[in-house]
Length: 187
Image 1 (cartoon, helix red, strand yellow):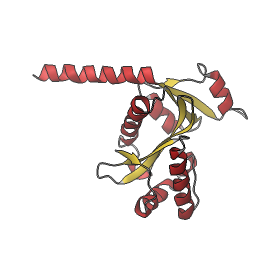
Image 2 (tube, helix red, strand yellow):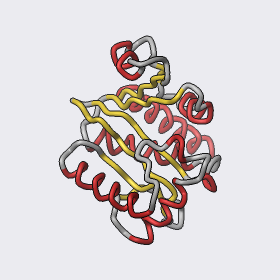
Image 3 (cartoon, helix red, strand yellow):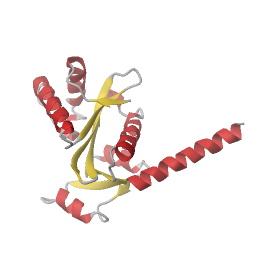
Image 4 (cartoon, one colour):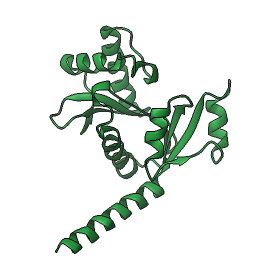
């Protein structure tokens, strides 16, 4: 489902083509306007991860084809900002929540991250609905006012969401209990 980023001609070409779709491109944080620029940005991303500044993964479909990226940017202390994009042909097929789940497990249990923030443009209804659908996501405009104000220093552009490690862990535990109960009922 997720793998470390690579400067691989085939992968970069597919991701660049998916990223430049007009329904995707406006919401991508690291925009590339040419394939060569995309390769350069991918190299920079890999180097930044090596320095501990971010964590970046390629999202794969069930046939291991690249379909988007998921990233934790601006790592400071034990927090960072999530950035995800998935190619238009893969919208609405469940990849977003699967990718987030795999990424959050890595961040919270392998990387010692305590809170993942999501800044979502207030007009990006699709992303806001996707975030609000997840049981472990909190709307944080009011509870994390310092972060919210910093994001919107020049005017109200973003809504802020937070995924605290403890809430994510509780959601996993609940899901595990439900699965256990379901298996017991079938037996």
